[in-house]
Length: 165
Image 1 (tube, one colour):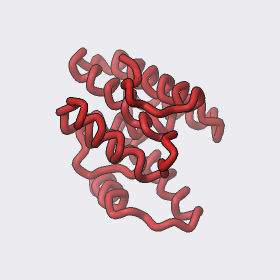
Image 2 (cartoon, one colour; image 1 turned 135 degrees about the vertical axis):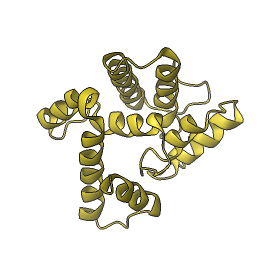
Image 3 (cartoon, rainbow, N blue to C red; image 1 turned 30 degrees about the vertical axis):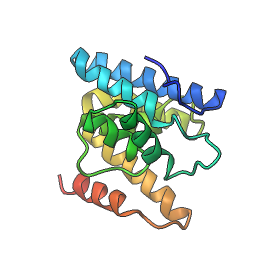
């Protein structure tokens, strides 16, 4: 698998996408995920930031635009499209594809902040996915709040679904 031909990414973004895909592949193998499901995870990885570097891109809009383009080009898997669409926000109705992409996008090893701590979380995912998912969501939400931005309704719904488990 690789980037779609319509992707607009810098070399740095491509490297990020490759690390996300590699991490998802590693987790899928460690968790014994069937090949068909593993392929879904990888499609979402290659699509999630495919339009992140287009000129009109923004933090919240690139996922929905990539999902729309992927659907236009023939991607019909609702789970993959929802994973791509909401990968920066979280989404209460995600299946495993969305949850795993959300984790990999945050924990991929190229991110420089708290490298050792993120590596520890990464290692826990195959055994404790849901606990790590809640921790990652909490950290992402705290970052949004510290930045003074509003929480999007999708994020609030996602957090509430995790906190009520």
